Amino acid sequence: MADKKNLRTPIVCVMGHVDHGKTTLLDKIRGTAIVSGEAGAITQHIGATEVPIDVIINKLGDPRLRDRFIVPGLLFIDTPGHHAFTTLRSRGGALADLAIVVVDINEGFKPQTYESLQILKRFKTPFVVVANKIDRIGGWVSQKDLPFAVTFKKQSEDVQARLETKLYEVIGELYNQGFAAERYDRVTNFQKTLGVVPVSAMTGEGIPDVLMVLLGLAQKFLEANLHYSAKGPGVGTVLEVKEEKGLGATLDVILYDGTLKKGDTVVIGSLGKPIQTKVRALLKPRELSEMRYESKFKQVNKVTAAVGVKISAPGLEGALAGSPIRVANEDTLDEIVDQIKSEIDEVRIDTGAVGIMIKADTLGSLEALVHEFQKDEISIRKAEVGDISHRDAIEASTVEDPLYSVIIGFNVKVHPDARDFLQESTVKVFTSDVIYRLVEDYQKYVKEQQE
Ligand code: GTP
Ligand code: MG
Image (cartoon, rainbow, N blue to C red; front, side, top):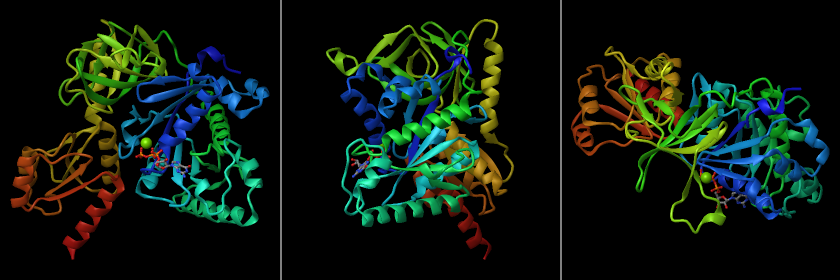
């Protein structure tokens, strides 16, 4: 068995369609722990929540499980609303080690459910599906916080049948998306079959089961991958570039490897040359009990992966969401600057050749879009992070072929002067916050043009 000290906390990303219950699920995982007097054990991070293994084991109610799991806990990241999981990238893959896909069992699959699945498939990220809001199934009698098997047995036969019908619709959809899935307690091999856990994030029913499946996945898939060196230089991903009162531009970062200290030199990707700066402050959210303080944040001198932290430093304005951030020293600085530059250049495209233009909100979403369009062999002339500008509009309008006089915008704004210009021009603009919809819309447009 691996040495516990060398294992870092797995990062679990909670994904799914708007309003299907991602935040409620996380609140529940946190909340019941608070109720059971373990609030201090739960650490609130920037953009994430850390739940230690002891709290999880307590929730599972079987202390014998303690020895079976060697992960130190789970770091949960909520991906709010339309803010795509795609931001959570790391070089060559997903930042998340594991994921939870939340789907409302009554509503079924929606655009962002499909999108989540496509991304997970592409990155080969292990995940569990939560079929949420079972308390809304007609006739359901809620049993607060109980495991699914127990609450299910207490329901009438009619209600049980209704749940099974809805559940198998979810399982059928998963099958259509290329995943073999089963109700989690009917799965014998989680490496071959996806587990689907019926849950009510509201009442807490099924939550212990979700944690159990997650721990199992964490254990099986991650044992080999979780080694990290607390002494090594920090490596992370920028979740968001945020203006904070009194601090200016700050970065919300998930550090997934190594250590980051106040005063460290860090390198971050930007549209031009990578940013080099010194960390002025590392900030974490204050605990609820510390709310007497003015500021929402407290300073720490050092953080170790996996952790969510806010970084205050000079010159962060041009930083790119989704970009890597790395700690450098005198010896490694040049190499790291080159690395980050090339990592960003790999995602950005500026060929000047014939093709469409793609604009996206973060490096991760840009990467995903470029991947999808290239998969369908659609030529791209330019792909970059940022809103649709007047210059973009002019550039697109110089392209003669209507199939390529096109701007694709994902989660971006159209600048007013660009909008005025575009209205007068023949440039075709597609904007959406769903990646595959942009691909579909463009393909439909191509078909129409060819007829
Ligand atoms: P976004 O962050 O906007 O994408 O939504 P979300 O997925 O985080 O959903 P959220 O947790 O905010 O829940 C949306 C609504 O559904 C809220 O009104 C919740 O109270 C409700 N809800 C979530 N889970 C359940 C559940 O298990 N049962 C019932 N009845 N309602 C739920
Ligand atoms: Mg939410």
